[in-house]
Amino acid sequence: MATPLTQQDLARALVRELPGACAVAFGGTVSAIDAPGTTGEGWTVAVPFGGAATGRFVIWTDALSAAACATRARPADEAPSDAAITEVLAALATQLASAVELTPEAAGLLAGAPRARRTGAPEAGDIVTVAFGDGATATFRVAAELAPAEAPSPAPLHDSRLEAVLEVDLPLVVRFGRAVMPLRDVADLGPGAVVDMGRAPDEPVELLVGERLVARGEVVIVAGNYGVRITEIAGGRRPADLEGRG
Image (cartoon, rainbow, N blue to C red; front, side, top):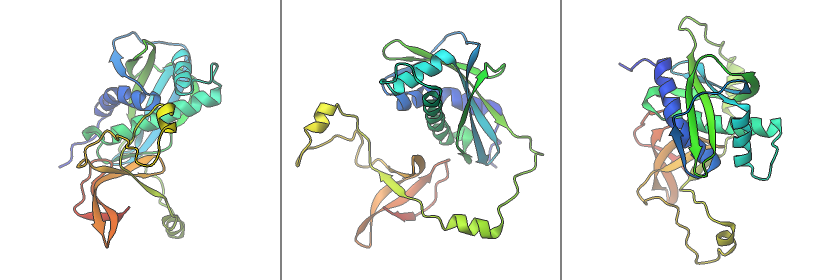
C-alpha cells in the first residue's frame, strides 16, 4: 500500500532540495546555513501539482534576495527588472519542483507551470537560507499545500479535445551529459577535441520534453539505430523494458 502524501513530508523535501536547485539555477557551490527569516515585501512563486495528489508548492523570498538571485543568474543586469526577477524565480521554482518530483516523499506527483507575483511574507512555511561560494546569501520560505480530499477534481476534457491534445508532436531530447567550460576552451574546440561530460559510461541518460525531465534510461541498439530503454519515469515509477527511439 502506497504511503499517503503529507504536507509535512513534501515541505521537508522542498527544504532538502532547495540548495541543490539553487546550485543548478545559479551555478557554483551552494549550501544551507542557519539564519533568521526575513519579512516585508517580496515575491511568491506558486507551482501547482497533480497526479497522486493535488495542491501546490509555495516559495517566497524577500525583495533583496530575489534581486540577488536575478543578478546572479544574469550578471549583466545590475538592476534587474520585475520581469527578469519573475523569470529567474520561475526557473528556480521549476528546477526545485522537478527535483522534489524525484523524491520518495513526492512519488506520483507532476508539477505544473510556476506563477510568480509580488507579495508580503507569508506567516507559514519553513525558512531556508542558502550561502553561495562568494559569501552572498538568499533567504526563502517554502511550504507545500495539499488540496482537501473532498475537493472536487477538475472536469475532464471532452473526448474530442483530449484526442486533439494527444496528437500534438513534442520534441523528445536524450541528454547524455552536461559540461560547463570557459569561453576560451569552447573557442579552442576543434576536430579531435575531447570534452569530459563528468559521467560514467554506465550511468543512465536523461529524456527531456522541452526543459522537463520525464524519464531516465540506458542506451540500446534498436533496429540498427540508437535507442533508449526507459528504466525510470520521473516521479519514481520503474517500467519494465519500455523502449523509446532516441
